[in-house]
Length: 567
Image (cartoon, rainbow, N blue to C red; front, side):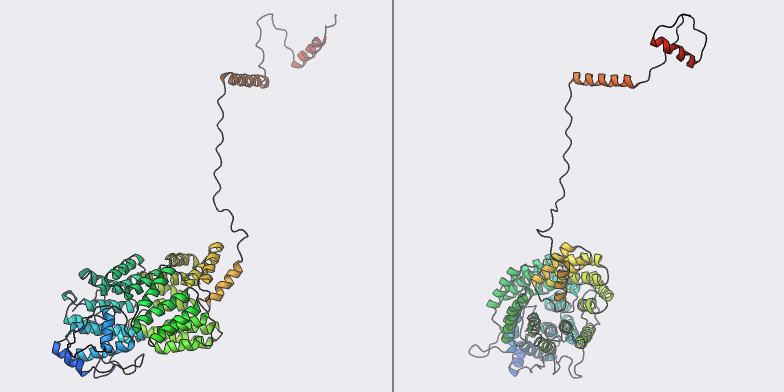
């Protein structure tokens, strides 16, 4: 049996929904759509052909079985539609996905060693859990994928199961494990396009923009069309190339043909519109996505977010509640809680925050790491020190995306460590992504550190990028800008360093005559200022008798004035 490195084979046992069959989906799932039993025609066809009908769902190519019955083309059923969607690398609708899961469940009951079908079923569980937010299916996915590898090892051609495990690791936010699985498949099958979507997600989660770009380009070479356009639009979006992201996303929406694929493309256009501060356009795109595929529940949350930006706060809570009923993701509970808090409904806000904690705890039991979301919540509404610890753990796991860097920088600031947080906040904004929250966080940290010019610049960038990026933070950004005031008239002064002082001119060489004149003048000055030395004694005539200096001075004075008197 192939076991992923550093993964406990006994961890995450699947829940038992019924004592009869651990692989039968519960009648009441997140969408309340029970899978129908397989048709007799499907069962007979598979029994006749002995049956390999799969590969990997949403990340792997499926091997479709030729149908020789009938005289003309037949309308494809939900199972065939799901197979066709995944063969193209596109999402299947929830109803078609449900039908495919029910079909494969029945098949593996009678063919428990069919490795490709088990790989398809396991990866279908991953997608079901992701699309329904029912994290219990992750454990069932892991169990089924391991059964597939028991039936056929990955080295013997069961790369579909390895890709399924990579998709499962990404869904659980274990990006390092997803990278290991994906790169294992890539080394063995470098032209297998199905591995590149999981590698793109893994590299993005690890913050490796270079590897994510290379994987996206390779995916585009191997699998052209709407799936490649969708991935390219996401790449441009993450790099802050808004115009390119928008043009590519529009092309994907125009070329999409299947409802689930088109709804996903329209949802992406809605997110891009909201991020650039155009909530009316965002509402229109989310509504179009829901009209195209009513099961695209993420568009319900996107629509609620845009309604908040339009200040339609009487409609937004109901929209969020509808999204949470159909897709109970903890990030939606956080957004609704902050909306209630901004409206002064503190009791309702606390209810949503409690629901967030409960959902995160359930996800943790299913092996999903929600540390990033919990840290964002704790930084603003709980214990910032706990947020720092959670995010340092993510950083040690090499989860160094722009989202983690931004959250860690903000948590450090909220914990009173703004200087340390500045480095991470700058790293998040430095990726190029045009995210108003990232600019807001950086600006507030710079303001705390009294770096007012850059603070004003980033806060202005936040409100210019998306004036309603958060019902709580956007008003604070505007208040901070008002407190900073306007920059000095004419802008800041000349910030260039002053020019170095000019060197003193060297004295011109003087002629020899001038130098001699100066030396003579110096000697003359020296003679005048130097005291006279006493005269040397003379040998003749003989010296007079000794007398005092005063007597000599007295006798000498009249002699200097005129002739002396005779006796």
